[in-house]
Each structure stands twice: as C-alpha cells, then as structure tokens.
Length: 454
Image 1: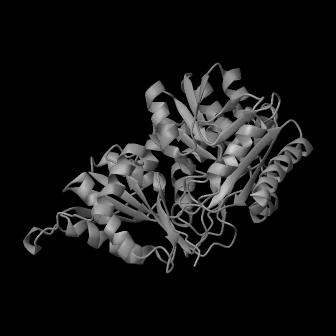
Image 2 (image 1 turned 60 degrees about the horizontal axis):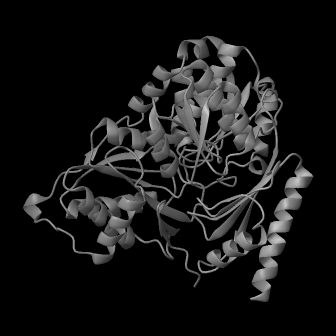
Image 3 (image 1 turned 90 degrees about the vertical axis):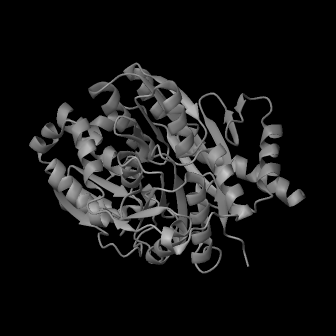
C-alpha cells in the first residue's frame, strides 16, 4: 500500500481509512494537549464527510489529558486561528486537508498566539507523540466540552472594522462566489451580504464536503464560476478552497486573474489605502507582486513556503501585509494568518474607493507568465533531484532557502518538495507563456533523465 501519511510543519494529513484514522487523530490530540497544558483548546473543522468522526476523536484525546475542548463546528481556518487568540485559549486544532481531495483529512496545530506551530514547536509536539507518555487524568478530573456559537462573528467584525466597509456597502457590488461545498457554503454569503451589502450569486454552496470541482482554486478549475460571473453580470467572482484560507478571483469579463495578481491587488489595497510598510511573501510569489510592492514604495522580504514561515517573518520585520503565491492573503492588523475573507473585503474596498473594475485594476500591474506543475515522487527522491538542479544550474544565482530557487535574469524557476503532498512542486515564471513552458519542460526533462539514469 502506498504510504500517504504526511507529518511535518503543515500538520498531519493522510487518506481516511488508509493512513489517517480516529486513533491517529486522538493520539495527536493527546500530544497537543500535553504540549499546551490544561485549559481551553479550540477545535474546528471543514465540511469533509470524515470531519465529524475525527472531531469526536480529537475531543476524546484532549479530554483524556485534562484539556477543555471548545468546539467551533464547521468554520474557516482563519476564524479558528483568530478565536484562539481572541479567547486567550491554550491552543487549537483545525481538522482540514485544505486543498487536498475529499478522501484526505488532516490536523493542523495552533499555538496560543493563534498561529500554526513553527518548526521548533512542531518537532517538540512530534516527540511527545512518539513517546506517548501522556498525563492521563482521572474521571473526576475530566473537563466539560463547550460548544461555541457564532464562532465567526468576532472574526468577520474584525475584518469589516479594518476595511472601509461603508464604501463597500455604498457600492452595492454584485458578487459571484464559488464555495467549493466547503466552509464558504455556510459563511461566505452571510459575510458578503450582511457585512458588506453585496448582492451574492453563489455556486457549489452546499456544505457536503463532496467537491464538485477540484478543491484547489486554480484557473483551470473555475469555468463554472467564470460562466456565473458573465451570466449574472457580476462585478467580480471569488473562489475559495474547502477551508477558506485561499482565494482566487475572476474579473467582470469572466477571466481568471491568477493567484499572483490576487495577492498583488490585496497588497495594493493595504499599502495604498491603509499603511505603507514592509511586506513578506514566499519565494514562489512572482514578479508581479514584487513590482507592485516596489511601485507602492514598500519593502519586500522573501521567505520559505508555508504560512507559518511567512507569518513569522512578518512578525520579525513588522510587516503590514504579506501572502503566499497560492492566493493566501495575510494582514496582521486583522490576524497573522492567510485567508480568503479578508482578501475578498480588501479587493472590494479597492474597487469601491478607486471606482475601477477588476480588469482595469489588473491592467496597472505588470504581468508575467507563471506556470506551476507537480511531479509525483517518493520521499527519498527529493534530495537527489534537488542536488541535480544545483549541479546543472551552478553558473546561475540560486537560493536554497526552500528547495532550489534559480534566478535566470528575466525568468526564474523554483523547485521544492511539497509540505502537503508526495510531489515535487515546479514553478517557473518568464515574460511569455511559451518561455515559461519551455523552462518547465527543460527542468522536468533534466530531472527525469537523471532519475532514469540512476
């Protein structure tokens, strides 16, 4: 049987019924409870069919070591992160495999700051899990479980207090949203209608966790949303992933603008409408983001891929905004996590206050052709393949901060092992699609040739 369990800085994820089980979830919850100590631990989940089962296992694990589980139910990941800090809880566990297919599920571990565990804390947690020397409590010491009603309310109020909600409400935008049958199916319409006075046309909006499109909101997966935007003459279309931390955008003409431009627009809103200052993005964020930050007068810092790496860098440099190339927008004044809800609000604010359409706003940002591919690998192949690239492109400037990043002048390629899937991620950017495709093809051919020779 192919090993699908992945344990790392992004948490623990696997295929339910194969490598991911209630027993595994309960034991990791015991490890988390042991690490954070007795007190409130918040638990949320997305809409996957296995979510309720895993929630019960997590609750049992936390209770067994003296914690008090606070169940938020089906909530966006950023709402859970926000509420951990808002309630001064000991920590949290989000049950979601994010952009993975519905047969996957996962645990993401949250510290008392409302941020995902960094590398050091994750290593300590995994040591506790492997030792399995847990401080079990007697029956008389068991805590009660609490269900938190309206777990998203405080989070959404924080977003609307940051943006110019009055300007957005006055504009009365008609908005299409593709919720992917995930957490957005319960929360996105209410957020857009009640908080921002938008007229909402929603699709894939039943919270079944059975995804009717591929859960990663890439351009090639958004045909239904594009059709909805043009059919209903919407000002913009938004697409979310199942747990609500990634955002993709369709312009009023039914065209995907790309994750890079999504992040760039949100950054422009923060830097020009709120506060100018440092920005942090990961290595794979493209030149569009870089040029946008430069044009606004901001200072850009690059980080390793992974939300926690970006957030920790933002904290270190005092960044006013940041993001990941996957459409993850981060505004620490709201909360230091990536999320789609703040992204939607910021883009609507930019439209309202400039009076420009999405397509017009996009025209002001330099465009490059960025292509992303995934190459399936086994866990022991990655080091050899990355070494091949270092040798092959030794004459060019490189960064080894996260895999191998090769600077080829007016183009670049970034190859790294995924934190969430058994694949090698290959990202290339160049002035034209043909040049990006040629660069991807060149890298793949070199890797495949070396692997065939070994």
